Amino acid sequence: MKFCSQCGNPVTQRIPEGDSRLRFVCDSCHAIHYQNPNIVAGCVATWGSKVLLCRRAIEPRLGYWTLPAGFMENGETIEQAAIRETAEEACARVRNLSIYTLIDVPHISQVHVFFRAELVDLDFSAGPESLEVALFDEADIPWSDLAFRTVGRTLECFFTDRRTEVYPVRSESIQPLAQPAIT
View (cartoon, rainbow, N blue to C red):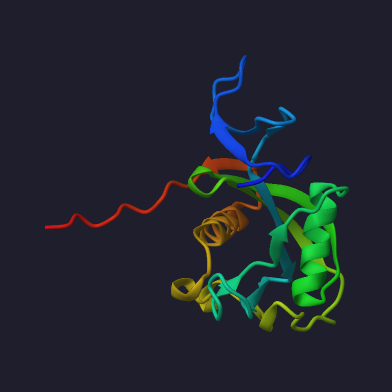
């Protein structure tokens, strides 16, 4: 951030009085600009034993497979965001949503929340952000071509939990991948 969204003057990064974190602060109007994590919401949308996946038509991870998901918008609930993103990316309608995974991704300031959901029907197709959309059995999931680790982790949990038909709400964190040592 370079300029204040309140008055347009330059901002500096410092710890404001009474705070403990670096923030962008306007020295002109004294506005403190908080930058908080983004929430990604999506669905593990199923039809029978199959899960709906979308192949991404946009970066990041163009061409890789993902669960239908995206950033939550202001003015909507997280469940509404998951339903909207499923409709936008897969032109699919879902019902019976149940919160399933909450995955903190602190190194990129995001929280990914996935709901278990049922497809209303088989009337789905690729939306503008998807190259294709398809249903996959567990054995056919393109594990090495999944776009995001949160998606892979959610699918791993889902297929494990499906064996017992017990779906606890799972909360965990994903840390950055270790960088190879330079020798």
